Image (cartoon, rainbow, N blue to C red; front, side, top):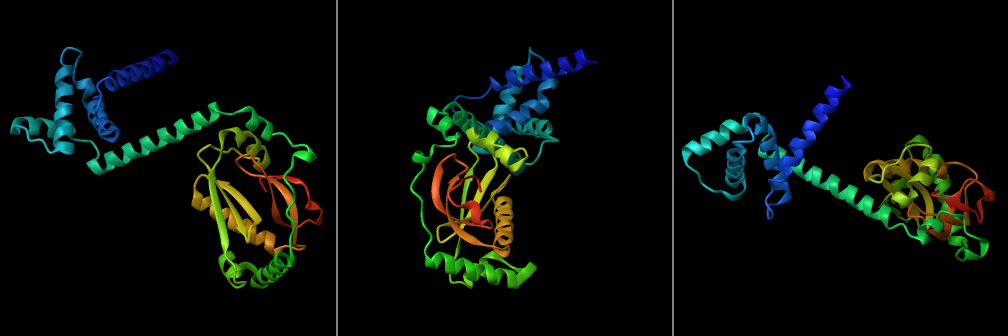
Length: 274
């Protein structure tokens, strides 16, 4: 049974490799991926001796759809017959675009993984006290704003909406998003205690340059929603204090900034990702 499965996998890989060699040097990638579906569908109906005919028909199929080339009626009818069962062209191009995007994400992830420098590796280590950037101190404006904001959020209870609560204080919420750097994934997985992909999005929330909350999710919208929920929970909980702290961002950089915290002992610590 195992050998049969391995044989099928090997055969599929061989077919895919043979078809990939038929791509034209100047052929657009999304057009090629659509033509490849045509070739895959009809590949087993031809033998090694007459697959040149299949390649020629696939070129005609591509020319008909993408270049507006006209062909004799007999050729057009043959192409239509061979196309039966394929998705419509808009769906084929959407599939091609998704595959191109997925390849680009993997390429960027692999490139980033290759260029991890000694500085990046050192950034994972807790820096010595003298290496930390100078602290940022809160002022009366920060303290007053977050005391009022926290009080208003608690009054709103379960109906509290972050954007509304902040706008009532005549301020606005800032959302910052970025991808998860491959060199930070292992450390982030330990912190969040769940698997994290290089394709995931990180969204952090701040108000008047004061960090509130951060979340990681497969999409920016989901990460934004989770971060917003976390921010409301923090703002509704007491005590709420504005502290000066050093925080490790998702990109591995240690920054000195103001953060809101529900612990008076948070001052001066290197907080990873939070």
